[in-house]
Image (cartoon, rainbow, N blue to C red):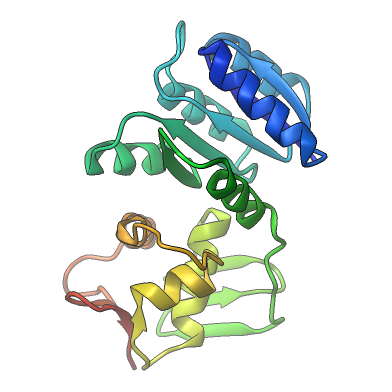
Length: 221
């Protein structure tokens, strides 16, 4: 597995490179956002770790640029910025996950492994009103129009449709969709739900993804 680390602090970059190489990853380093962008375009990476506060091009802008040409490569922000607003902004820019400094290397390693696990498909199609999700074609249509979703958005929508008429708690979603089995900020789910609603063009009257306050989400007939 090949990883690109974009980090301007030499000590942290060296620490990550050494630890990940001990886990048999091939690691490339970039010290600023512009170099990170060039390297992201010159090679195929299995995953990228990006710091937010980078010289020349911020991690946020770097993530947005990468997403213009690669919708699928997993990206994890590794940063000291720790507010909810920062987390939301990072995920909206296209990141798959967000880990705050300081962190334990074992937690980062597990998050990397989560992102690299293959998504299991059931080979089924799910329908709800004018919405169709096909797991074989990996496609979503709503009101007769195709909807472009990220892998995680697709997996979340698939999970909700698969469990139609059943309350899906945040804990269940983090465990079954994100495949995370340790303490984790489930607020990330709300970000993805909002993104789904926006991409599906759901307004208040047509929103079939119901929020059960304090518990989770449900799609009902």
